[in-house]
Image 1 (cartoon, rainbow, N blue to C red):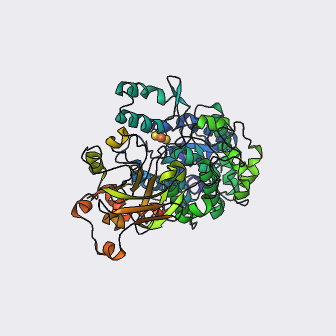
Image 2 (cartoon, rainbow, N blue to C red):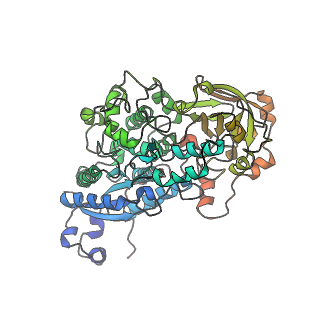
Image 3 (cartoon, protein in one colour):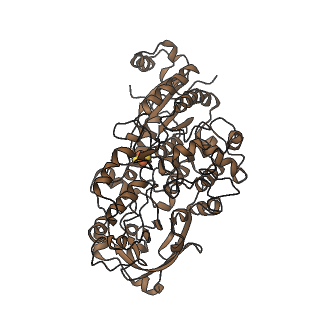
Length: 571
Ligand code: FES
């Protein structure tokens, strides 16, 4: 049998092998170095990532599985990102986490890795890292929290925060009532329980083939999560023996399967930038337009918040991902493999819908055409995205007068100004929120509606931004406009009063002014001065090297893979 990678540290009788073994002998016996596979557990558990705080318990179950299968499990705490806490936005740190995790996987004596994630950016960062190292790798999504409840009503975290806070601004809910709901919303361990980014990316990791089939979507508090984590530990040992690496699993077909799943579950728009970034690491030619071409004809089958009614606990009870994928099985690439070595489609036999309110059969979809629409036009030459399922149907074809904000701060300062010249037909435009301009592409595209319009009963308007939108948010929001304003995109040239045309059916987003007039414009000084200009550290590196949203917003020098090559010895 070929020696494992870790043998390059531990095999032999020389001084270096002695050092490597001796320092690890704190509970490990000589058997640990007799050629068994060493499995890292890349663990994003952190008290400051509350959605992932339970992953240490998950790691213990993985360890037992690894031991049982004859491997050596090794806990590897890695950079973690708490979506609700880290500033200025967790997306600024996704690439940093991916880079740090990649380097630590490559630098250490390991043969395979179990990736423990949950909160929004953690699974994307783990998958980007694993793709660039290409060691056998399997993901355990930490799972959603249980349904929140307040005064007999179910509360979905995230989505209901937006909804309730808008009610306070509209004067239909008191501040005291709003604050009372705070302790009821987060009812258990786990990540957000709507079909937000965390739920979406956990499910898509399985649709990609990178999760033990049937695990994704298991609530964090459900004992089956630990049982399947134990099984995943065993599987990781098997994967090392079979040399089942990300590059042997992740094909274009795998990503197209994930896009089909994204549409059928009504997943987060954030999945677009994350899947593009992962594909870039593994060398799969995926484009933003693939999301429209493959996903827009897929029916929406899942009735979950933010645009629907139910939550992830209901989704799991109703049959989960396999029940959904079985309905669209004919749209899936039958050759795309999973961590088990078998195709994804071969694992769908157990998929059954147990609650047709939560998961609809193919013949009775919530919408016949779901997914992400990719728009082009003179306002977004490299594309922009909109999630029609979360938008208001009457606004999907709209011509309105732009009200332009140069930054989040500018928007907050003026949005509720009674003197703001805005009406329900206006189009709210915000720039300076892209990867480079903010920096980090925050989730602000679903900007709040002007208070005076809320009081008139307006609940949605067309909004356009070069930033992202929270997966738990909803509305007629055009986001990821590329190139962003700070990268020279025409979004920087729009002026308050210009007419903007959104035509989702035609996939167009345009400023309604003559081309020569647009070409003659240059950005205002106020617009340019709002862009970030970091002087040092990660932010400077990020701003100087980050790519645009339409290719995944990875750093230019991180695209691709360096493999699992063992570096030279320093002792
Ligand atoms: Fe962690 Fe929503 S805040 S998943």
